[in-house]
Image (cartoon, rainbow, N blue to C red):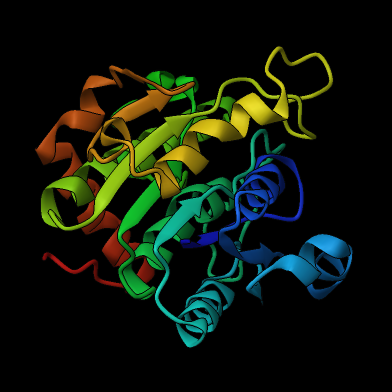
Length: 257
């Protein structure tokens, strides 16, 4: 049985993925933004192999999350699930970054660099990543007029590019990106067409399955099927430029090999 760390696992897709993996007999390390949210997990927390706490808006707390996970032991898989959607304003993290960038892009990048390397990495993206653009000159929204939908699309392009870059850099790790669809969660709303079970299925399958179809890397998935992502995501030049800029913004270097 595998041990899997899932960011943002107190509700929505993260919690559904945790419940699914636990029901299959796997071990799960949960993540909550705060102690209060961790306490609200109830029975799910008692079933977990571990619990880490920290706010992904904060670089210091993100580094602490990495330390907490490493103290538990090496993970077999990590599902980078946590994210935010429409933020009314750019906001400002303790380090001065735009909140959407910090949570959706910087945090998974930092955790990837700082947590002991697992066998599998899964990054939750969105079909909206195709609306992202090559915004590497102003990743942090310092010059552009704030556009919450665009910031979200950009961030989801970033994580697909990161997943594909890691598939190239780290051949011993299976690294993939997943579009779960428009799911009925707090983020997606009650009118969303995709139920929670369908929404979590692909990422949990990629995290633990020994099916040959799941043992691939550098792919973009939607409901257990491979799809073509935006062209920028597959461009090694874009990937490397992105990683270089994320390294400068965070002060954290992603290992080359």
